Amino acid sequence: MSDIAAQLAAVQAEYDRLPSGLRQHVERVAAEARDLAARWDLDPARVELAAWGHDLFRAHPPAEQLRLAAECGLPVSDVDRLEPVLLHGPIAAVVLRERFGVTDGEALAAVRDHTLGAAEMPLIAKVILLADKVEPRKRKRDPILRAIRRLARRDLDTALLCWADWKWVEERARGWPSHPAHWDARRRWVAEHHLDRAMPPILPLDPADPDFAPAE
Image: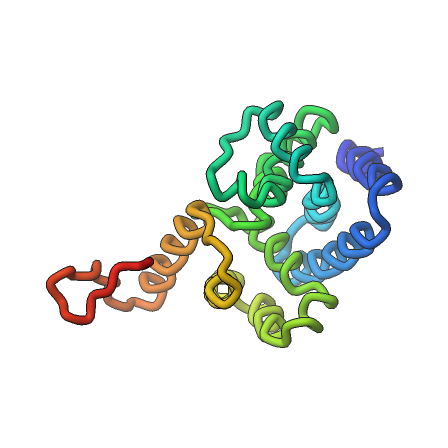
């Protein structure tokens, strides 16, 4: 048995003690990730491992997530303290490395960054994030995710940016805070999108402009 196969079996076994609904979600994400992996010529075993690892700590209570983050030596922002569930990916990445022996840095990055994204993301991380967002139950709940799923099959970077725009609208509509790490990532994605399309750079807002309105 290969190292990845053994690691995958061990991670899958962990879901026996977690809520069945979480396991079903992970199975749906893994199926989406396998589809994208085939379209983007990624190693299916690495993608499968990252897909199963991504939500290993998703069901833990908030206090437990904060405790585990401290144990793992992870930085915890004010937004993380308000929403400790945001820490489940970084926690899982540390545990996969230290307990399960996963040394694939790109797969670990995919697990770590699947909730918020990151300014620099390997291909496998883009696949896992998008697979997590567009799995069947989520796109049934919000039809815009169907369009993002279709787009991901031909342009992962633009699909990420569209997801970030959708996320921004959701956060404003629901009064949720925006995580600084996500906004750092989004700014990079926007800048790269403009460069890729040979568009002029986005100029900073000018406080002297009468249309300038500082963000609240």
